Image 1 (spheres, one colour):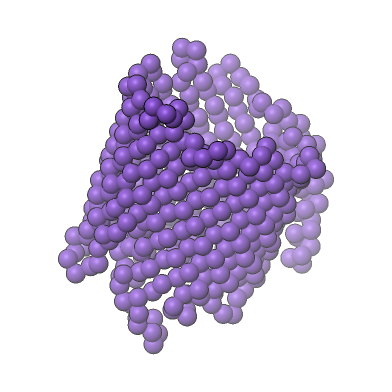
Image 2: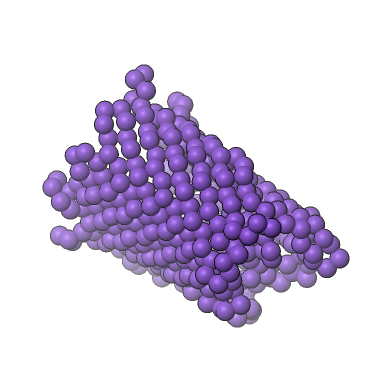
Length: 391
């Protein structure tokens, strides 16, 4: 029966939605432009609960409508307002108690002036996504992140001052001890050396306050200094490279602190008009939800290769590796040790553009978490087919 449901959903996708018409420029109004997008995905997951053994598989249908509103305004339309919303609606064939609806909403305001700019943004998420978390279950939570950045330029110097705020709240009271707020303030100074026109050197400083709502013993703060370069790093390669040091201290003296190097790399290599290579790396401390650990040390690497061919096809492949080290010894069953995970993910996909407004993609992803705690190991295979429609 579940196979029949998936087949029926694909028939609806390929047979019904092409009746819609689309203008690539969106729906234009005097007061801005509206863009609509709908992603419809059928997915097979062979380890729904990310278990180390006795894995459970299922088929999931996912519908993701998007809407974006863009409004240039002011003198010569130099200011810009962007509003965005999407809902991700997941329906499981067998494990219907795993059905979910995630919401993302954001606002971005960019005000440009002769001597500088002001950028304001906010992202609100009502989600149960397990991506970038330590959860193997779907845990409902609300996350909100806001940023304000003021910048000004003087000849070859550019100065940016920023304040950001992040909060996380859980729907279930059993996770209330993990709810926290983080406020970060800092500045970045950019300098363009005379031989260069598209490349900046940078110096960055940030101070953060971490406040747990119901567990003050987890409160902490950190200071971070980084130096680096951004812009045109090499021929046909743009991005940012920066590294530095973070001094992260928690209020409870008996808990481990993080004093270590940090780094961030994000590069895009335009090999040709049809061939792109993306590379990101980072080393940082992440607030932990695992037992008594305040944080874990994350070292992450990700690369993605895109190749267009035969006019309408795009081949996409990706590879990521993540090493997470936890500072505190924990006991799970008969094992007592400091947890360490190695996470490998490989993905491939092939996209075909039927029309400017209609694209289809087939994809496969393999993920393996290899932990020194046997209970935290798992393997997962995902196979999917997705159709995207622009209105």
